[in-house]
Amino acid sequence: MKVRIAIVSDVHYAGAEERARCTNNRYWQQVKNPIVRIAARAFHHFIWLRDHGGHNNLLDEFLAAAGQPDLVVANGDYSCNTGKAGVSDPASFASAKECLDKIRSRFAEKVRVTIGDHELGKTDLFSGRGSMTLASWPRVTQGLGIEPFWRVSFGKYVLLGITSSLVALPLYRLDVTAADAAGWDQLRQTHMENIRAAFAGLKPGERVILFSHDPSALPFLWREPVVRDNLTRLEQTLVGHLHTNVVIRLSRAFSWLPPVSFLGVGVRRITGGLREAKLWKTFHVRLCPALAGIQLLKDGGWLSIELDTDANTPAKFEFHPLKW
Image 1: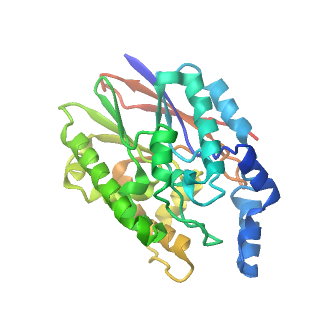
Image 2: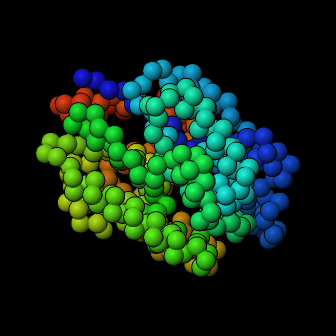
């Protein structure tokens, strides 16, 4: 039997309040250092995304084009995180809820959702604002109704969704305040136990497709013996976070660079994760780009998978570009 799965990632939807913030309080105005401010403005204007929060229409285009899949996976980052504190910020929560409500209204019980770093918060790359905020956790799991870990089976295929920020907490610890550290540690411990149990419980002949928003989590999974022992059964890992395949290629090319500790928390986290990008290949990583891609290439879109539930043939992937 054939099963079709649609995957969407990094929607970065902007509700009314976040849209107003993006329009009236330009990103670079939050950066105090004038030289860094110029760099931030140039980076977003020419390379990353000029109109942050101005692409809500792409979600509507995905919803119209996806047809009637058997499963829809949303792989993280539903708001613009303009408050830099995840969905503990009311405006970011409203954006994420509006985004997920649209997806769930269209596909109902077929939807599975993973948690991205924008849902939890992180320190901003240029301004140094923000943190991974423990107050976001109940708003994610209860307010948005997202399961931190989920499992779906189609015949011999097992699909697993994990929370990458918890798995990679040793890396994200730079973004965690001292007051929140113990709470995050406990959440990670529970999450890792669920992941270990899922891999230990695989039946003979079952194959795994893994969903992890941030590929920085993968080296930490590799350190788990039960995961490493089952990597031959892992057919593909679907990630988001990086927005474009250009970043995947650059990450692998520069994985030899040492972590950079003198340019702030954001750079230290990114270069620390980059250091282990060589391990991503072990997990057969495939990127689902951001719906908008990046400004430079406008290479966004979404993915679909066709599965043979008997696992006689490998999963077939198709990229569906969206133009803007």
